[in-house]
Length: 286
Ligand SMILES: [Zn+2]
Image 1 (cartoon, helix red, strand yellow):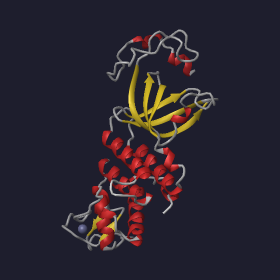
Image 2: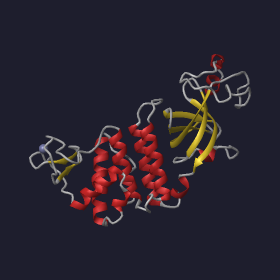
Image 3: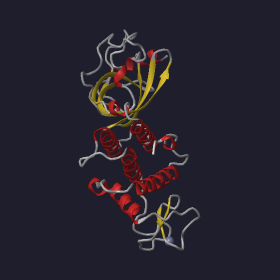
Image 4: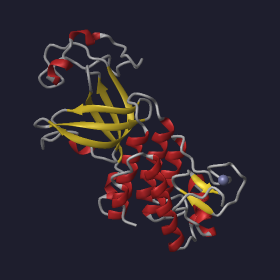
C-alpha cells in the first residue's frame, strides 16, 4: 500500500510542496526497496527530535518528530525494526538527528538519518531523567498540534531541555524534575499559557498575592481564590520565577521542600492547561 504511494509518477517535480529543493534533486531509482519505477522523488532535509515511534506492519515504524523548520512531522521509517536496518537505532525517542525525507502521498518517508546528539544515552541510565524526558517529548507533541507548521521556539526549548537533562545546566547539575518544571513553564508560555505571576490571573489586581491556582492560571488575589488554591512559600514563588526565566544560578540553593512544592504546582498547572493531562506526568520520579 505504502509502496504504491511512494512510487507515484507525478512525484517527479524537483521542488517539493514546501519549497525545499531535494538535496540531490530526488532519490535515485531503486534506492528505496521495492520501488523500481520511480525516477525522481522530491526530498527535504531537517534537524529534528524524535518524539515517539510506533510499529507499522511487519518491520516499519511511524516516527513523530519535532523539526527545526517543518514543525511536527510524522513519517514512515521502512524496515527499521529489522536488525539489519542501518538507521533503526538512530530513530529512538529523544534522539536529535539530521534527517532526510522523501515526500509520500500521505506520510513522508525517512530516507537518511545522522545522529546529531544522542540525548537518549544519559537518560537510559538515569530513571528520573528518563521519566522527565518522557514528559518533555509528550508535552512537545501535545503543544505542537499542527503538522508542518513551523514551531521553532518549541523545537529550541525541547532541544535545550533534553541537553540540560543529560549534561546539566551552564552552572551545574540540577534535579531532573527542576529541569522538567522549567521546560513545562516555558513551553506552556510559548503556547500561550504563561502563568500569571505578578497580578491576579482572574481580576488583574496588581500583586504580589499569596495564592496560586493552577486552574485560574497562576497567582490569584484573596477575593478570587477558587477552591484548592495553594499558598506557596516565598522560596517557591522565587523558584517559579527563576524557572520561567531560565535563571539557573538562582536555583542553586533552593531547598528540597520548595522544589517539591513547585513541582506539584507546575504539574497541576500543566495538566490543567493540556486538557486531559499528561499521561507521563504522574510517572515522573519526584
Ligand atoms: Zn483577583
